[in-house]
Amino acid sequence: MLISTMNDVPGRQITEVLGEVTGVTVRSRNAGVQFGAGLKSLVGGELAGLTKQLMQSREEAKQRLIEAAQAVGADAVIAMRFDASEVGQNAQEVVAYGTAVKLG
Image: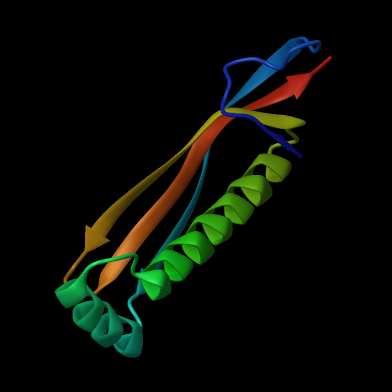
């Protein structure tokens, strides 16, 4: 499955637009990671545990986006984006979304 953040695919023609597809994951924060992040915030620097969790969430949302695109018969997803937001006090939602298309 071709995933592109561009609105087209150079060298390929979009023959059919199948519509918007999304992949969503909501994850709670690991208590240990939260504790470590709290301590790290006192001295500054990257919160590596939270970075790792966010990257895992993005990958999971992207995989679900691919599955949704495959379910509608797409060859590619164009204009793919990520969005993230807090859900409650200890959870984060990550959404991958884009437009499913068939290519010629």
